[in-house]
Length: 365
Image 1 (tube, rainbow, N blue to C red):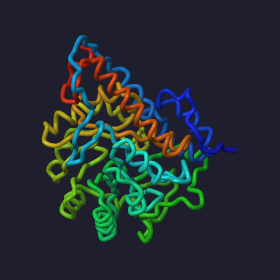
Image 2 (cartoon, helix red, strand yellow):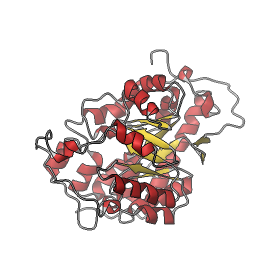
Image 3 (cartoon, one colour):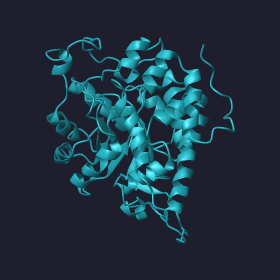
């Protein structure tokens, strides 16, 4: 039996990791497998977390912290800190209020939220309940007319950017979900994909090549086509290779998100902490580079910015807090990360985000 969401946040919740056990107690076995699990043996999932901690920091003392701030601006959106909520599908698996609760928390903390194509609430309903800056994460569908309609809906609802996921043309081999027998429960669905002609479903142990799923996988021409469909800033999420970053730039993207999909698609990939520097070098300052995967502390945010990221995206900590305590839990996670970021900046001698560079990392990093 699962427990109901907490009515109040316990005092012993001091770090975002403290929400993991609380979420596990409140989620069904299937929902836990879906939200917490990764692909294959989950080596990439584990490495995402571990790699940031291996980057040691360098403390600097007696620095002037007057006027210190974590504020930044991305694509015209002012942010209280370089933190965004990553796209997370089917949030009603975690809490009855789903994406609406997460959006309310984002608004309270001045944090942009990236809404998933596979949200369990409509694009419009999420926008209606929250003044938070919203971006829309898009999977390019085989039906271009349907994809265009999604883009128009996001534009009309006031979303400020499009994040196209490029690293998941097919679902990863998620053995934890298979073992748990995960299926979406009644009342939870990708409501924004209603009316899309479905491709034939394939079991996770089925062969892929030669199937409609393989034939429908998007390509570079689809990314260039999407760029022509909207004036919104367009970011490519899931870029891990410098050559792919350059191709994305050539297709007209306005930003790159270094991501291995939280270890949920291809197991065996390096951690995003290891992948980030080469992509930053390839982009060479032409567009902002963001990163997700394993961000669990404010010190991780400093590490990411030191390696050249403009901002980070946080996923699982938010969904675990949502499962444990609803909107207050998500707001608490964002508050903790910002407080830890401020402390880490102060102790590394960086009063502003612009001051964070590789000099904050120990020489061995």
